[in-house]
Amino acid sequence: MILEVRGLSIHYGGICAVDGLSFGIETGSIVAILGANGAGKSSLLKAFMGVCPGRLRGEILLDGAPLGRAAPDRIVRAGLALSPEGRQLFAGLSVAENLAMGAYLRRDAAGVKRDREDILALFPRLRERLRQLAGTLSGGEQQMVAVGRALMSAPRLLLLDEPTLGLAPLVIDEIMALVGAIRDRGITVVLVEQNASKALARSDHAHVMEKGRIVMSGPARELASNEEIVSAYLGTA
Ligand code: ATP
Image 1: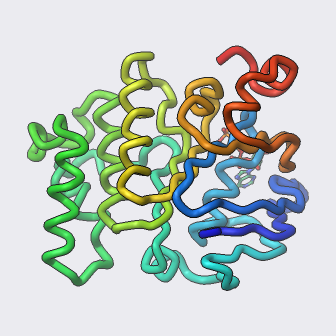
Image 2 (image 1 turned 135 degrees about the horizontal axis):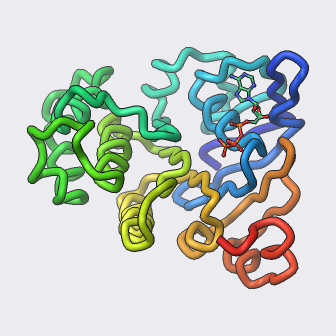
């Protein structure tokens, strides 16, 4: 298990966003976290990265050791990376500069160069646009930069927060195929999505969140084939 959560709660003032969660992420898997707006998914990913502004209780363990309240730079060095909701690119910087920002903490220049090549092989559209300002890219291309930037820190665990939000169906399929390619490189992936059916098709395991709790967990294929679950929790998306 690469990451484990034990009794994790997150409060913002009087609001409970995450309510006593316990679950684990198997090394090498793709794990989907599904649920409606406000279910607590983004708060959870932010807590993993040490950037959640809420009040945390409970434990997050990486490789079996408690993270405590580690600072984000230590968490990145330990092998986690987040592609945040809304992409959060540096719109006035080029694609190349955005990617370079992802390697900010690294000192192994040769490794950074190798990873950059690997990422550009994964996203050939970005290689053609290295000098283009990120703010002028299409939505799908921007999402690729956000994922590429997260990969530039050479993570073992990649957290993707709604990577398909607002994208056209064909572009969604392209992004989802990339998720599989990333896992094939040995990187564990946590995929937060509202696009449940597409996410389940790509994932090994899935958790459904509702009001800060996990209300359903299981192999992705089982969840996808259970009509009751699909209509009750996942809608038709
Ligand atoms: P979405 O898909 O809309 O991003 P989500 O499942 O990711 O939803 P969160 O963004 O984690 O859910 O939000 C969970 C709850 O916590 C919501 O009620 C939200 O309003 C609240 N919340 C999130 N961030 C903050 C914050 N910084 N301050 C106060 N409340 C917050």
